[in-house]
Each structure stands twice: as structure tokens, then as C-alpha cells.
Length: 212
Ligand code: IMP
Image (cartoon, rainbow, N blue to C red):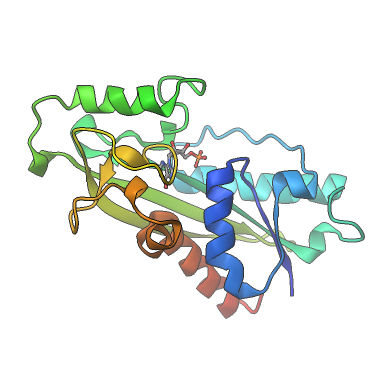
């Protein structure tokens, strides 16, 4: 059975991914654990394009350089998973979208980014505050093939931050079902409904069907 490298430097994402994939029985390495120093530009126009670029780019890097953190293994022993994800706010023309991580600059805190989005929606009624988190997972296989799975979760932008869990835009993204922000959900509750949970479960199914 092949192990998995999940191509992210984001610890929040890594925690979610480990939880969702733990029933696969595969060993899951972060880039850091695998000793991968590759940098892949995320300048595609869509989430799918960026996810594919990352997964394929890292697989190619591993084929060339090996994985210093995975003793005795080669790229043939792995599937590289990468995701691209972000927040689409309908009233803002689907911003920040693929620019979610870069919105207002990488070094700007999420407290500021979230406050800015709320300020830009001043006076907007609940029915027009619709938004969604989108995630596309790409899987790059050692034979050079690549496939993707997409997941979304619908919600709305609240009027203030709430909750301490999750990361990024979670404190301002509220669910219609219970008017809680995704930062108010436990990790388990978020994984059940999240864009990343849905995309990863879809990818698990695809990997199974392909016999990986
Ligand atoms: P990526 O690492 O290029 O996929 O950037 C994704 C960015 O979208 C993150 O840095 C967050 O700003 C935002 N994002 C994606 N998923 C979530 C989530 O589950 N909660 C909060 N923010 C998220």
C-alpha cells in the first residue's frame, strides 16, 4: 500500500487531513516530515489548476531528489496529495477565491483580513451574504497520472468573528443550519461538513476504485 505525502506547510490543514485519512491505514507525511524543499507557484486561475500543479510538481521533485525524511523509500512508494482551497464571497464577486491565502498580503493577520471582509459588506443583508469554502484535492501518482476531487460547504459571512477553533477565515464563515461559525465547531464536526472533508473523502473513493 502506498504512503501519502500531503503537500502543505499549513499545520491547521495537516491536522484535518490526518484526522480524515486516518482510517486508510496509510502513513501520512507532511512536506516537512518527508524533507521536501520544493516550491511550486500557485498562480493558476482555478483551484483545480493550482492543486494539480502542486501535486504533480512535488511528485516530479521527489522523483528527482528523493525524500530525505522517508528512509529507504522512493517516489514510487507514494501518492502525493495537494489541495487548493479558499473562500468565495458572492457579494465580493467571489473574492478572495484563489487569492485567499494572499488576500491583503501573506503577512497580514487573519484578524485584519476578516475585519476587512466584514467592513466591505457593511449594510449587506443576510440573504446577500452568501459564501462558500471550496477545496480541490489533486492526487499525483508515480506513473505520472493525476486526478482531482472537489468539495464545497455553503454558508454566509457574519457580522463579527466568533469561535477559537479552525484557522483562516473560519471565525467569519457561518453555517445556515445553526448560525455557528466554523471556528465554533470541534475538529470532528468541521471535518464532517467541510469542503476539505468532502473533497478528501471523494479522493479516498477514487484511490480505492483505481486500486491504489
Ligand atoms: P491554500 O493553502 O493556497 O489552499 O490557501 C487556502 C487559504 O484559504 C487559507 O490560507 C485560508 O485563508 C483559506 N481557507 C481554506 N480553507 C479554509 C478553512 O477550512 N477555514 C478557513 N480558511 C480556509
